[in-house]
Image (cartoon, rainbow, N blue to C red):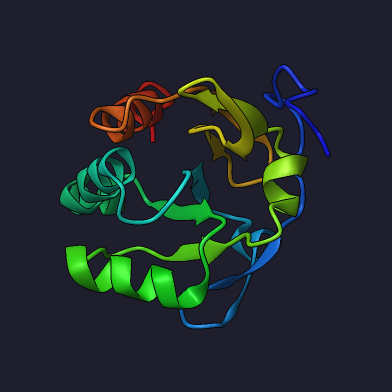
Length: 161
């Protein structure tokens, strides 16, 4: 078990990931080479913060498309939960299943959390902006669900994308 041992992955090649999407299809990060990619980790489908973040991404789809950004959400939820979440909120981007949290561990976002004095392991709400060569150009830590995608789009604009 990794407990956020990496302070940042910025400037490094993005760790490989192969996960199923909500339809059970294999998704591989290496297949996205040539595009800017945002992978965002979130704790759980259909919870307040996660819904806010997903809907804000959905609502910025025109700006995301204009920036030629591909967005993928990752949580420990399974395909069925992802399908329900996508359907309920009409989400227009893929959600990936990291049920065993191995990818979250690779990215250093599987961390010890605490609620009401109880400690447990879970996903930290972080995301990673990856350039067309597969390198992480920005690690967003403990993002604010309501404004995160605006920050990403602003950073892409500053890069001239």
